Image (cartoon, rainbow, N blue to C red; front, top):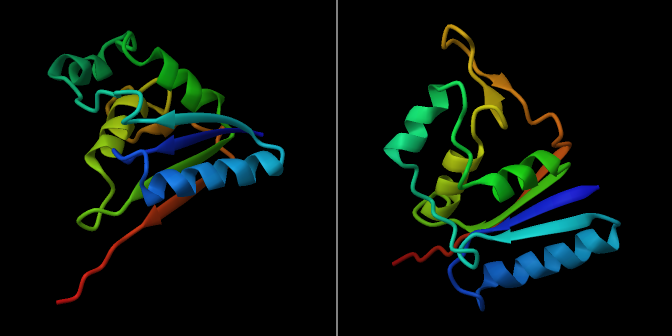
Length: 138
C-alpha cells in the first residue's frame, strides 16, 4: 500500500521526528511503500496567497507551485500525519499544507452552484495521526 507520511515539526532532533522515523520503519515492516514529506525540511510555503485562493473558483486551479505535493496526496492509499499538539491544535505549517494541498480538483470538487463540496480522495483507505502534547500544570 502506498503511504504518505507527513511530518510537521521544525526540529530534526525532536520527539516527533523520532516517532516519525519509527512509524516509517513499522509501516515498511508491514509492506507499505513510503513517501515521506518533512514540511519544514522541504521548506514548504504554508501561505495561501490571495491569487491562489481566488483561483479555487477558476476553471483551472493554479497548481504550479504544488505539483509534487498534489501528486503525493492523490497517489497515496494511506496517510500518516505526525505533529505536536501546540495550543490545543496542530502547527500552522500543517494547517498551511492542508489549506494549499487539499485543493479543488484534487481533494474535492465544488458544486456548480457553490453548494456542498464533493469529496475526491477515495484513494485514501486509511488515515493515521501520531501526535503528542506536553502539559504543564502550575
